[in-house]
Structures are given as C-alpha cells and as structure tokens.
Image (tube, rainbow, N blue to C red):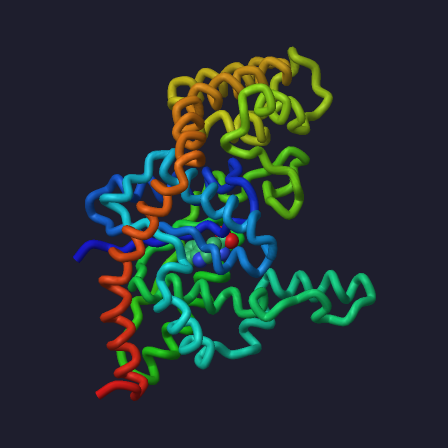
Length: 332
Ligand code: TRP
C-alpha cells in the first residue's frame, strides 16, 4: 500500500516564499516519489475564518490553485481539489467535533494567542473570535483523517494542529475500533521558520512576506528591503545566520550554494549578496511566473482541474464516510 500524503493551503493572502519553502516545495518533492499517494488542496473553508469578501475569496482561492500548478504539480498524478467541493469533509468535521475535548481547543495556539491579545488589550477574552477560528483544528483534522493520511508536510506553526488530529483520531478509534490512520507531520527542519523582511517569521499576519510571483522589479525591491546588519563588505559573514543565504540555498544548485557560502565567509557586501539572491530566484521563477499568469487568466481551466480533482477525491471519501457512519450507528 502506498503511503498517503496530504497538505492544504488556505487562501488568506498571495502565495509567498514561506508557503513555497514550508509546504509547496516539500509536497512537490513527495509527489514525484512513486511510493506516495498525494492529496493537495485549497483550504477555502479555512480561509473563510478570515476572508469575508466574496471577490477576495475567489481571487485568493484561484491564486492558491494556480500557484500549485505553476510550480509543477501534476493534477493527473496527485489528487488536487478545492476543500469546499468535497462535502464529506464537513460531515466528518461535525462527527469529530463530538470527540474533540473543548479544553484541547482552548489550548490551540492560534485561538490562545487571540485570547491573550484581547486580555492584554483589556478586552473581553473572546472579542472578535468567530467559532470558525475556534474549531479550525477540527476542520483540519477532518481534512487529514478523511484521506487516511500518514504524512502531512507543513510549516512548524502547524505541528500542533496535526497533533490535535492525531488525538481526535485516537479517541475515535478507541471507542469504535481501528478506523482512522494516525497522521504524522513532516517539516523541513532547516528552514522550518523562514524569517521575513523584518527578521521575524515570514507570515501574512506580520505583513513581511515576499510574494512568490511578484514581477521582477518589485521582487528586486523587496529583496533589497531584507534587514541586514551594518558590517562592512570585507567583514566575514556567517552564512547560517543570514536570511539572504537561507533563501539563496532554496533556489540555487548545491554547487552555487557552496560557492556562496565561501563568499560569505570571505566577506561579501550585502548589496552584492542581495543581487545574487535576486538573480538565482528570478531565474528559477521566470517560467512558473508565466505559467501562473496564464492560469490566472484561464479560470475555466482552473475550475475544470479542481472539479476533476474533487470527483477523484470523492471516490474515496464517499465510501469511507459510509463506513464511518455505519460505525457510529447510522447505517445498517
Ligand atoms: N492550517 C493550514 C495552514 O494554515 C492549512 C491547512 C488546512 C492544512 N487544512 C490542512 C494543512 C490539512 C495540512 C493539512 O497552513
């Protein structure tokens, strides 16, 4: 039996470098490996916890789909769909919520940090928190468990969510017998937290991201904004403590990376290092950027690919959902 791999990206902003390095790149590497079944999706219902403007929702969802495809996802070998096209996920989400201890969700990072923010601001603890934010980990557990997922490639900030999915699966299995596979997360250790322009974690919420498909001139400007120290060009620099080198490595060949490592150690001006980073990124992104732009002007094609993916996904989820309902006493 092939191992099942699954990951999703929520459409709450334009695809940025952190999405690419943390989730898309490792997921695409796994997709090339014949010993895995891969399911990749646009987590639009997760996006709904934040995005309440229909035009924005549509644009961002197509943007996530086009990014996956532009970067090389082959929808014939992977199962590639929009979460909202697979209604079994929501049926399962309710069932799982009846097995998710509320205390466990009170401790989920995303919710907890909103509560802390409110407390620090002297507001009511749940001010501005919708139930979608609170039950977010349950919907994510349904995404994962419905596909009998073994491996979930995600960024470090999602580890707790995968652990919650595991906990819920275990308590269901204990009650009704072996039903769900227990998932594990896969993180890219080296770059698990990618720093953004200001040195903090690259995140849409900090507004410090580098959008992946930015046009070359803007990309160059953003790279020039990356924070560096005030050391002079001749001073040796530690490549492993530099955002610029961390990003360079992701787009360069191993020979190029070794050469750049040497140049850092010998002393390289930050301006020069940024120029080299731009060159290597831009040449990698040239073709995907064109693919992306073409796909974004061809919505019918994106819809057709996504709907096809949903049909493929539901060949598994419909029968599995029946089995689950039978176990809890809802079918003969
Ligand atoms: N919560 C994930 C994120 O913000 C996105 C996501 C939704 C996901 N469902 C998933 C990731 C299932 C992996 C598996 O990045």
